[in-house]
Length: 280
Image 1 (cartoon, rainbow, N blue to C red):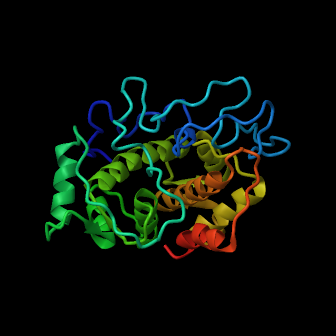
Image 2 (cartoon, one colour; image 1 turned 45 degrees about the vertical axis):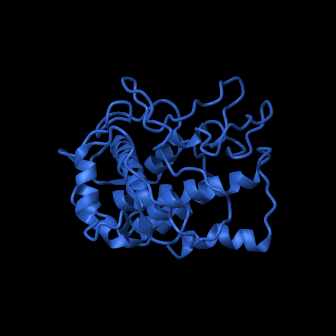
């Protein structure tokens, strides 16, 4: 991935850098939430068979709550400006899935090559690019993704299914992929271009998601291109896997305000939560 532009000063780290010690997806993306009660970790496996960390979106007992804006953070960089964020911005839950996307601008300090990449894809000068244009823009940096993965990226960074993305969201996608690529490379220890079930477990734990063995097996079976025969997933499917786990967890978290591990959904809300991940 040489030649991939680094995040601008104060906006993350480039490829090859280890992910930050904080859990990037556990950084309270929906606002300041209180940690769960002492000793209560509803999302950690009961017997902690993995030596699981704290609940996926809460600080553990005795720990300080996670700081905001850490997903791009490295030891030598400041977090990105709040205008860009490290992952999909919060938005009102369960709005229309086809709501219009609000026009946006590039965050200050965006790498000129990122701007040029977007402008090249936006051939009609509309200020938006569609799914195929985003797929092409990412492939120009050796980031080859299926349209399904591109659709998930667009959905989670815009909270709509309009399948268009503006400069602000494109920049957030671009730098977030740097972060996720670094995590994938960290756990692909044999440099096979794939990670097995154990490595996927560690990668998800580093992101703050402690899934059970049953869920882990389902994820590997779903995202292994051989249908589960190899029991390993490649980078593009790793991104899709992380987007799915992250997105569903955050949607559940919106309803689990007390961090109890339980939530109540109406039938409509349940369908609006799950369907975007099925039809992407």
